[in-house]
Length: 426
Ligand code: HAM
Image (spheres, rainbow, N blue to C red):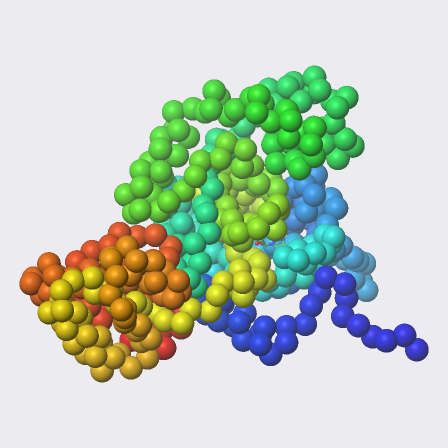
């Protein structure tokens, strides 16, 4: 008798891995709930037609990777390859979306028949958030702030790439131009790229084939077709992100592999190469609710691939400390720093605070702080000692340093370190 094994690309989560997954889910749940998102639980099986209409019949996800089957009654079903379509279906079915604002989060297994490799599975877990009924760039910005909060809680700082795909008419004009441009070089394209050219020329922009990559630098940009409203939406989103200190890179080749997006699209990439570096991705989809039979409702959201995030967290060195106290001043300032350290350890017994030893310049001390893996540094030099303050400096995930009264150092650290389960400390 042959040995029974788990299906290729569908893995067991053994106790250590399951605990890490639970931690990731807690971090994302907490971030979503901090922004007032509410949980929705959705079936893993949906009518196959839902994904054809939502994600797009010609997309790789639906045409090549979807698990489709007829059940015993002959009903055509699919294991969900992603969460958005089902969430929109549920919102329409239960009247959650029309004429009101709705913020939802969900998590669960998704299935895609891809070639398995590290970070690419046939069953993987997504955590997603979707916001309905809000059309301004402010909700796009909120989604990205929510993401930043969760990444920070996990000690990760993935790069955020951002693009706009304009509205349907703007995109149609761009698509035509792309079809002409790549069409002129069709002889150089491989079979997959020729299929993309036929089905959706936008997808050639993120093709990995050498021929398509060579053509990329001169490929037409959406920029020329972008109307005033789409441009204003994108500019305003970027202004808000700059205002909130959310670092992002513009990427005019970011097009996404699902057909439902309008205007804003984004992706957070972790370290590593290729398609597997995308830890989370999403964007705005203003037409989807109507396309699936609901009343026209603007919407936006994103989903995180938890296995990919787990790989990053596992690779990141386990930090030896939460915070590092630098004391680059005179003996008196050092004594004040030592008193502060002891007070913080009394106040917050779960805080792992490492104090700088053997002096050194501020730069050298901050280098040690960085090496310790701590997520924040406290700096108490002569100026701070004289003023009764301390500088709180985030070391991971961006953010500005600020001076606070020494008495408030613990509270400032608590705010910055975002304990992900809300229980550890403070
Ligand atoms: P997606 O980019 O197809 O978007 O998937 C989101 C995330 O799921 C990816 O960034 C990746 O981390 C993870 N993922 C996708 N495929 C696999 C795989 N085979 N193995 C492991 N992880 C994978 C969506 O699914 C959209 N529904 C996102 C969204 C929500 N847009 C608006 N709202």
